[in-house]
Length: 248
Image: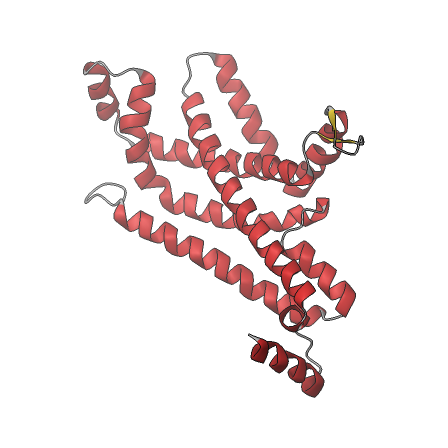
């Protein structure tokens, strides 16, 4: 790797293109850390948003009107407000009234850090769209299928988890794929509350080295790679779950 580092230094001297994140170990480690933070933030938010979508779609069919109203209110709140405003609301408004803990130095610190608030905010944001996506898939399942499950003695929850949801997944995967891709791109908003993800670390690097164009090109390539991996995996999942004559 030393040859690559030397090449990057020489390339900078010859062209003025400063790839400091290659030849400088400190910047390189910062960017690698930011990349993995972005990956981890994306994975956690993807999983939680899907869980929220599944639970919310089931709750939409609850017999209690209050439960259905709460789900509708949740969806309208998170779909009709900007995700950055939501992030600030969670971090600054709710975070300021949360209890604190004492660290090993005897200082008070928040119970939830900025990473946790980013996960909560982004998961709820994407989950609101996932609820509607799963609802559309559930409505595509024939009523006769649900009635057959009930006739066999399945409870409402068993019918949903074992019969309706697997069929609904096949219908809503294209829309779910689109929403999850948007969620990965939306994780860049975590920069606003100083989560050390890739955009935040890149900003620290270009502030020190004044190499904004180089860092922006790297960010563009990195996000194309991350989103490309997700799209590739979702498309493979979609093809593997196809049933002839259903959801296609």
